Length: 208
Image (cartoon, rainbow, N blue to C red; front, side):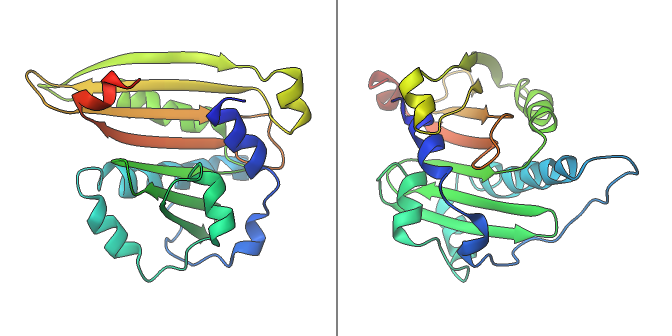
C-alpha cells in the first residue's frame, strides 16, 4: 500500500470529535445564501494552509513555538499522520470544521488535513496561488494524477484520490519549494483534503 493510500485508510478510523479540539482560529467568512457548509470549511482549510504552512515554511521552529500551548493529538493518533516518524500534530477546531496541522521533525515540511471540505474549492485555491510563482521564481506542475486504490487497499478503507504537485525554484537557488494537495471527494469517514508545503535540498531530490 502506498504511503498516501495508507495514511487515508488508517486515518479514516479516527473520530475528530474525540480529540479535544482547541479553538485556535476564528471563522473569517460567512456562508453566502445557498452555499454548502463544505465550501466554508474549504475556506478555513485554505486559510490554515496559508497562515501556518506557507507563512512559516522557512521558520518551522517559530510555528512550533506558536502552537506550543495547543494540546497535541495523542501519540497513537499522531503516528498515523506522521507515518510513524517523530513530529507534532495539533488538532484545530473553529466554527467551520475540524482540521489538523502536522509538522514532522526530520523534514522541512508542514501539512494541513481536513475532512468534509469542498475539494473543488481547495483545488481551485492551490491552482490560483501555487501553480504560478512570483518573479523571479519559476513554477512547474510535477504531478496531476488520479490515485486509484487496488482491491485490497479499497477493502482496508482506501478511496480514490487526486494528487497535484507544484514546484517553485529560482535561478541558482539551493532549495526548492514543493506544494502538494491530495483530495478524496468520495471519502465520508476520513480525510477529504491533505495539503503539504515542503522545502527540499538537492540531497533530498537524489533520494527520490
